[in-house]
Amino acid sequence: MLVGAGANITVQAGDDGILLVDTGLAEMSDKVLDAIWPLSKKPLIYIINTSDQADHVGGNENVGKAGRPVPTAGQVRAVYRNDWLRQMKDRNAAADPVLSAPGAYIIAFRTVLDRMSAPAGKVAATPEAAWPNDTYSEPQKNLFFNGEAVQIFHQPGTTDGNSIVMFRRSDVISTGDIFDLTSYPVIDIESGGSIQAVIEGLNRLRQMAVPANYQEGGTLIIPGHGRLSDHADLSWYQQMVTIVRDRIQDMIAKGMTLEQVKAARPTQGFDPLYGSTTGKWTTDMFVEAAYKSLNTGPARR
Image (tube, rainbow, N blue to C red; front, top):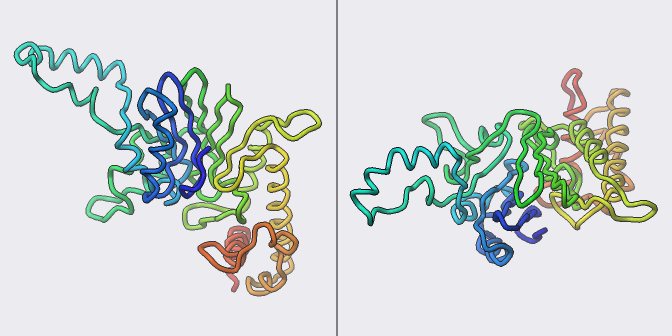
C-alpha cells in the first residue's frame, strides 16, 4: 500500500511483474515509480483504475508508459507470421513493436474511459496516453497474475464506474473511494453516484471481507484514502453512512428543503472524524449530494 501520492495505491509484485490499483496524482509519478521498481525484477504490466477521479488516474500516462504489456498468443503468432521474411532479410531489424512497445495495460470500467476521452471533434479531459486501453462492461473481470486470482468487480458508488479489486490469495481488497476513512463519501451525482449506491457498495464489501475471530484483523482493506483497515473499520464507516442516509431520508419525508436539512445538521456526531468546512469536499457538499440523490420527488431548494 502506497500512501501520499493522492489516492492510496495498491501494489501487487511478483515473478510475473507488477500490478497497480490506481496511480495517484500526475506530479507524484516519479516517486511512485521509485517505490515500485525495487519490488520485482519484472516490468509493470497492469494498472487498474477504480474511478476516473484525478487522484486515482493522474499518474496513468507517466506511470503507464514505464510499463510493458504482455502480448496475447494471437499477437505473438501475428508477429512471427507477418514479420518472418523481414527478419530474415534484415537481421538487425528492431524488435517488433507489439512485443516491445512500452505501456502497461490500463483496466477500468467502460464509463471511466467514456469520461476520460471525448467524442470526435471535442477536447478530451485527459491525454490519450492516460486512457484505459482494456475496459470491461460486465459485472466482473478476472485476471490470474503473480500466482493469484485478481477479481475486479463493477460496483457503482461515488460514480457509476467504480471498481473494487480483490486479491484472493493475499486476502486484500482495494476499495477505491467507496470506502474513504478521511471524509464523507465524495458523491458525484453528475457521474451517476448516489449515497444509496455507496451504501450498497459498503454492504458488498462487508460480505467480501472476513474478520478474524474475536480480534481485529482478517481481510486487509485498502481504502481510497486513509489508513490500512479491516472489517471493523469498514463496518463503522458503513453504519455512519447509513445513519446519515436515514436521517436525511426522514427529513425529506417531512418536506424539509435542502437548506433546512443543512441547518438541521444530519451529520452531527460524525463531523469530528469526517467533516470539513473547507477544501474540495465539505460537509455541506456531502449533505447536498446525499439530499439530491435521495430526493426523487419535486425539485426543492
